[in-house]
Image (cartoon, rainbow, N blue to C red; front, top):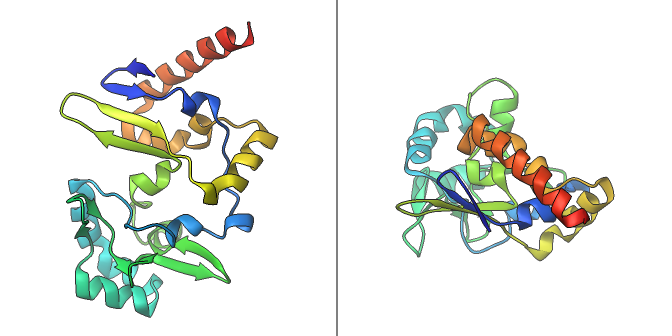
Length: 192
């Protein structure tokens, strides 16, 4: 672990390699698990605002789940998250064949909304836990992503580079530039 500004960062994001491999996992992270995507308070307001524009991109089951539960919910642990369809799929998930995709991201890609998707989804496999004085930035190892780990290793892409855009979105460009400097130093030390 190392400190970077007001974050405590796991060295795993420098050491582990990762590139999403949708052809292998089919977007399992959007349909597996026991909770929706983590949300910030600000993101709940965004979801409420954009839902009418995103709604045409969603599946009937997703729309029904959102209309019944709301555009966001409080999970069993009290955290804010996206609602689920029958305690499985994220309510915002859509399918291209058998591959799960984000309906919000599809609306974003078509220029309908200017918000890509929850930052927790954009950051994955990194998970951020906010505390009073700092945020913990950790690599989340999930077996459904084994193919992404293999592809990342093959392509030699460390986690922090794979999620560069999302890290900048969450912490800012200056933070990311500092992270790159730490990564360069870390690599020098590891190669000795």
